[in-house]
Length: 244
Image (tube, rainbow, N blue to C red; front, side):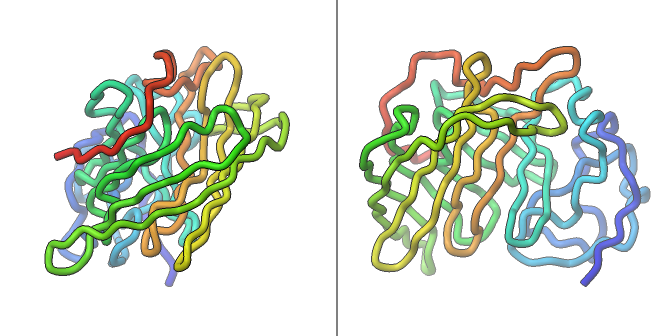
C-alpha cells in the first residue's frame, strides 16, 4: 500500500494531534504544521511507528530549535521526530506529537509506550567497552495486563572506526555490535560512538512486534555535535526502570 502525505515543515507545530478519522492512533505521528487540514490521504496502519512518514528534509530537522530524535522502524521504513520531554538521571524520554515515546538509558533503549506489546522496562548492560559477554532483561506487556520477562545473553564486539551519516551530517564513529539470543528470539544491536559527541545513532531491537529501531540524535545546525542528553555525565550503572 502506498502512502501519500502532503509535505510538512519542521518549523511548524509539533503538537499536531491525529490527522483524521482515518488515521491510525497506533504509532508516532509525523512532524506537522499549523493545521490538521494540511495533511491528506493518510494511511491507516496498526502497531507501526507512524501513521505518516517525515517529509521534512534533514536540513529542516537540524534547524529545529529544540532537541530532536529521529526514529525509524526499519521493517516498514516509517520514521518520526520526537522531542525531549523528561530526564531522570541517565534515563531520557523522547515523545512524539501523538504521545508515543521511547526512553533510553545512556542511549540504550529501556522503554517504549504506545507501539503495541511495549517494552515496559529493561535491565541493560554497559556497551562502551565493546567486548565481552553481557546479560539483558526485557519486560514486555502481555495479555490480561501481565508483564513477561525475556532474558538475553549477548556478546559485544568492536568493528573499528567508520564514516557514518547522521541526519545528513558525516561523522567518524567507533562501531560496536551487541549480538543477543535466547531460546525464542535473536537480534543484533549496533551503536555508533564519536569521541567528541557520544552516541550518535544506534539500531536497537524493541521486541518481537516492534522490531528494530534506528535511533538518530539530530545534530544542530551550525555545529557537529549530536550529543546524547545523558552522555556528558559519567556512565551510570545499568538498572531496571519501571517508569510511569
